[in-house]
Length: 176
Image (cartoon, rainbow, N blue to C red):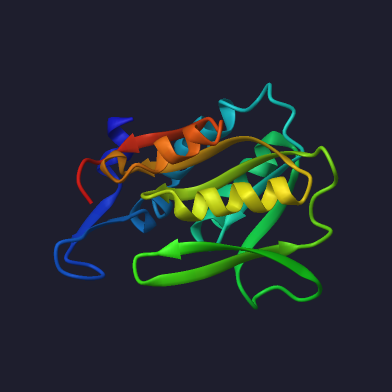
């Protein structure tokens, strides 16, 4: 996936000194690159009978919606606390300096539904783990987690693996 790697911009010292921010907006702006990323991520799950894609706010909405279309299944938005109307259920997760919550509608997932988690990047895996727990608490089965970027030095994929979840990424970048 070297061609996709070249479409991802690195912004040094954002959001704070020492961080190399991997920005996929440059990939999203490239029609061929975007199509290749979506096609490749979706292809891995063609035979997994996915009932819905759960996209994590916000870039997971862009990728997840397109992957759901390719897999001919539904889409479930996973949002930050307070962003969804109606009754929701939430899951806390730890951030570097505190705790945050993600939510879905309480009726978003039917018992036994097969759900694919999608986001742009996995770093420490805290958000992806929270999404998986939220789906499982709702009666869903996590069939996998798909990302454009993995930052393996931060251990997110290993965290998912410890939960029995197969995580896949198109490209990896060493460091933070």
